[in-house]
Length: 293
Image 1 (cartoon, rainbow, N blue to C red):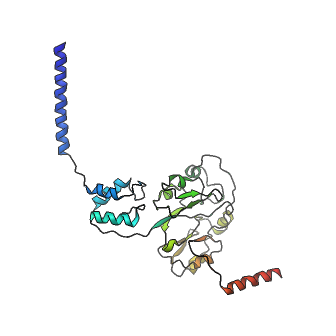
Image 2: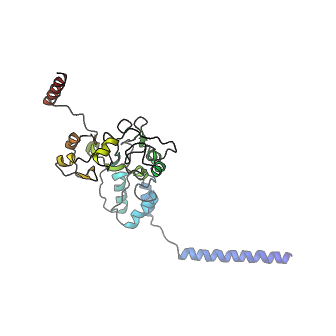
Image 3: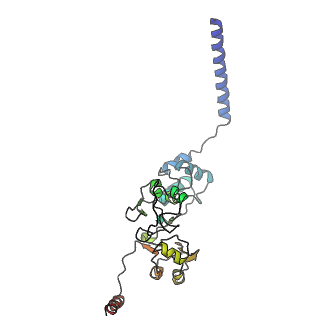
């Protein structure tokens, strides 16, 4: 009995040593040396792991930058140009500067502008609501108000306004990571250039129905009248599928389209309040007097 036990222990020990040696040889033969620059680049990253760069996280992004040998088409929206410049210095490659971007909610169908025609009584989730029906109003393109965008934002930059039922973006917190864009089943959230002095102009509507139908569903819907397209001196506005869109790369922020839009579907952000000209004031006074008479 004792001899058998000793023999078993010796055999198992020998087998263990043999397998350890085999594993050691295999590990040495197939060992892949990781580029130490990956650690250096990862250390520069903000560590948000938000996926806004298109990779699984900061580590994956750092690895992709090192292996690619260039930074073309690669950008960390959280770190911005400052971080990318540091990465470029570490890798010794050129870096293309990008204009800062921000998330924009292209819907202004508030409770006042877009009356409810039915009521949803279920889990507060845009994804679930979108799979069941078109929404609480007659606009099948507008915000559902379930707050999926708010839930996925890692920077607390977007909140649902309880009064309007719409999400609002805090431009100072938004990093343009795109999490809210991917979460919205209606595709009403878009990443746009912040613009000079954070000023931007965009169409706050996604309704592609014909004008009469769109206007009935929401008082501030784009009706595809093409007035904005015709008045734009820079060719920045196009109307397709009954919906106007402003190309932020072409837009010069002249705001002629805003004055021309009959439904006020075009919005401007962070512009100073316009002071009416004396003649404009006089015309308004004259109109009031005529109405009273």
